[in-house]
Length: 427
Image 1: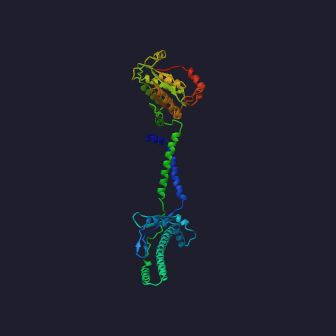
Image 2: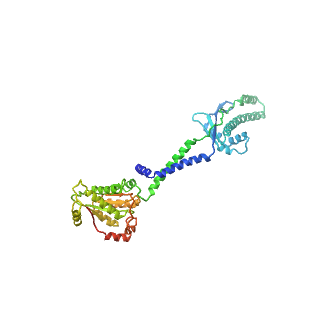
Image 3: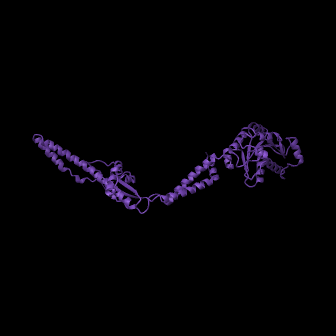
């Protein structure tokens, strides 16, 4: 799918995009109307390394990613809910919590969302306080386990027979025990308490509506392209040129008369034949719903106008017509070669022609017209398509019985083609 094809589609399917654009904007406005305002509050805290060995006072580095997971854990949420005096396990509050950890720092930022600004701020502070409390308990448990281990060793030594060595070990352990000071365990501290927000969180009304409108536009473009691809009719010259790729397309931009004159002029020019010396053999094929009689009459009048142009040496009159009827070698004329109804007859007619003219309307089947162009171009013949959107007169009874598909026709239409004059003379 080329960019030109997309632009042509958007130009002709602008109504679909406009409707999608409006629906997107209205959808964004409706979303804002039915969705309650949400508020966010953030508390910042710094995490300090805790003592891992109470005897030596060594501290482990803080794994900020691990602490981030702990801060958003179920246990911290449960403690925060309990501190707020609410019932429940904390799952609701935990679902409204998000934790950020700026890269290269030991800072954690906990954000809580709520329908109330005050509840959002209280929830963020409660989560941070519960986390620091849990971390302080964990650090205190390390010291308690170490002291319990030292007390157990002293008790075991006292149960042994007294000796200078035993007494020295007991004294050493007692010194180690007294050197442990659990008061220096600081797991972290708050550096920024939450402040109740004054405005709802989110992108805002303008950005929300603009985003929904753009989403609607994108969906509209997709719908327009899809509609273009499944549309069975020609609709426009651009679509015909991009799909069938004929040698030329003539459209009725101004009036019906100018359309047929332009079509006849393009056919004569592309035939490569000089009408002043040789007849131009035009294969004329109409594609439903274009009536064949209407096309023949209009093309007849148009060629007459070209041949009667005062600026040329061509003559139009009874004498020229008489010469043309008796011989295709006469000059100053054009001959319509009947195309027939089936692929074989169309190919045979193309081999006897100088140029092919396909007369159609925007309501013509695109596949039928594309198949015709393909068949004719395979014979080496240049193909000119006339696309007229002018109101058409009602076709005759014989023509109305023709089917719209190519190359199959009703039997009555085929019989009518056989009875037709093998060469309608123009010129």
